[in-house]
Length: 173
Image 1: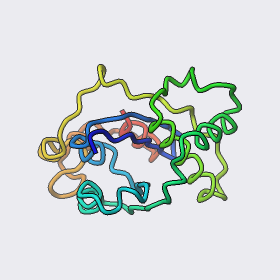
Image 2: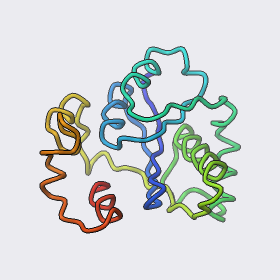
Image 3: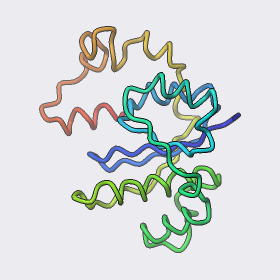
Image 4: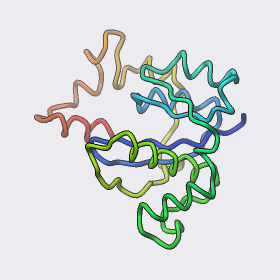
């Protein structure tokens, strides 16, 4: 596997991001977003990449059948969900990104039955505006998570928010 497409949704803020990165950079994405759950197609279940993700992630890994990542079906799902004729305005052109977005929309729709919300449209993460830091460097800089949890981190020093929503909003920046 040379590249991995991923979609990230924060259900508390309805933020929805998508991108494709080199496989070796995916653990940095996990470190940056600290997801509580990762959805992975079953075709990767026996790969070394999948094994490293399972060891590295703090949350739950859910393996879904490959059919849940079908580009044509997931594109249709996104068109229906957002009530649009084309995904052109989303800026998502890579098939695997469309698959990732559609599958996560379906998963959230099915699993968040009590919290029916409209997610914001997927935003492509600009790689020219952000620098990807490898997982080890991200961890050693103690930006969000320190050696002792969230104590003595850059995030803790900057976080003067009053509400949990404010903290999540700051954390997403």
